[in-house]
Length: 320
Image (cartoon, rainbow, N blue to C red; front, side, top):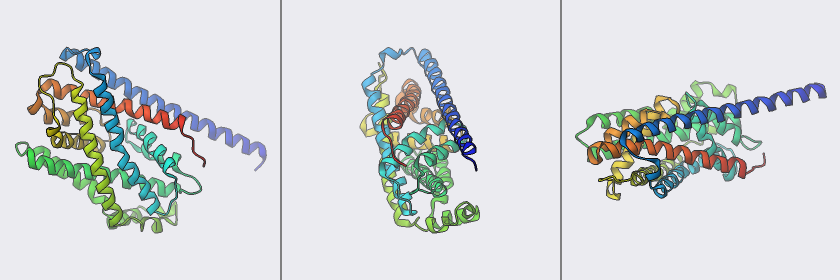
């Protein structure tokens, strides 16, 4: 291949990557705009002004959310290492948080694409990296569904429909993460055609690793519940807001909502999360707190993801 052909191929690759980045930014901006419009409509119906919000509580909600994602990041890093890869933790952290922007694209496949593109190097194989994303994500969802089912089955027996939903979601997301089944599924899909060493890599997925994942991610779900608690505190003039004693219900609510939103394959689980959060919170805290909390939670999490992704993308550089 001549130097001119190599140069042309390099330019084409550059502009393709540039176009993909612009597309991601456009889709995220569209999602943010849709979220903002939805929030404005709900605020207008409830007679609440943006200026009246307690912004310090929303800031705390964003912190809880980002902290809650961190245990999953650690688990993903450990999964990569267990599969024979050697990314640095900084590379893993950067790819993990930035990759979450991909969930605002229909199908959520872009999450895998972004994370894989950011983490791959001479120390990280592309196929193994993509496989590890599925392990981390399905484990996150499985733990969330089990946490929701256990809590709701204990404190909310009057609504068995949500308990059955949590059980169904736990089976749907959890069964594939059982190491022997996951290894069999990877072999059935013939991933070894893309990487002949994938069989050796997936042998690193064992019960010890998954046990660590379940422990870490359970802590993360508790932080997500704290994020919902802080979000509710930001509502001005609310007569009844959740207290820390309501944290089990809040954790189960946000867990079930996120898992259902993920499995819906809708961008960011839009609409699905709210269908879970509102009916679970309304009996205890009234319709205003339930509706506004659901809307504010989506807005605060989106802003948090945009902020952390921007900081890590532009402020943290890694050597490939």
